[in-house]
Image (tube, rainbow, N blue to C red):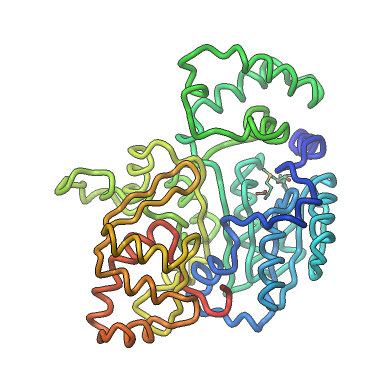
Length: 402
Ligand SMILES: C[S@@+](CC[C@H](N)C(=O)[O-])C[C@H]1O[C@@H](n2cnc3c(N)ncnc32)[C@H](O)[C@@H]1O
């Protein structure tokens, strides 16, 4: 653990200047309250009750600041514990919270393996951390033990294929530079990287950018001493051993085998859901991270919002309903860029008025009534929105968290 701690003391991650909090809020997944409600509380959390949250391995604070700031803006009560091994990262996270005037956060320097000592928690954020533990399973187990019975975890772990080229370089730099101090290691690795021959998988991988953005990013990507990616079926098995079940992935479309196979292609019955997703991950080939929500196994299948409940309130995330509705009405498709991902899917023009009716306040039953549809007709009309917008993480259900 000390090498990992030394790294994050020298290069707190991600590199952030607290003064930038005056200019912008960094948003992302996991841990936006909309997503938390959708994946952990079936879209029906009562946000007037305080949310007890843990940000485990909070680093310089991106997830922490997003959660605390959105809750503060919505005037929702919360009590957040931040824990991280690195004092340098904690100082930056604390300063970011101070600049924003955020309260309700307890900062702890320590290991997430002791999470249960600070709990129990309704929600745990653990983004980009568990794959850096010497024994990741112990980390999953510790977080599961810190959950309140109705709670859940939002997590991100690295995936192997989108990071192609990274692991041979981590191993080479580890063998060559292990006994140097972090700044020398960084200098030497940059010099070696600049001579990397054409055709090296790292040079041909267009999805990796962290090393170009900051010293901390370079170090985290290429000089980490402890880093193991998870294929999606390995992640599901690890959750299972911790007594957890996958509630959902933020972009299930990425793992949808049918989207990758020719129409009518046969998939052997012997493949269960994790095995199908694992095949899709191999065929897609570019998944860099898995962003997922997990809940105790006792709540498997109950934690994620399902639109058959017409009292749910839909939200569009990352898209303006009127603009999206207009584009669908005109072209019968959606086209969007999300990071390095180009989303392009057909969506019937008849879905446009339903999209336009999403305002984060109207329930599905009100949208159905507005469209003159009975419940059965509405489910049929809504299903394509779920398939396209829901599967790409744009459509979430939540009450009072938007
Ligand atoms: C890649 S950074 C991620 C930071 C933050 N979660 C984010 O997504 O921006 C990993 C963080 O995990 C912390 N960390 C690693 N092992 C830990 C452990 N056992 N307990 C607590 N924090 C840990 C590191 O100090 C570092 O700040």
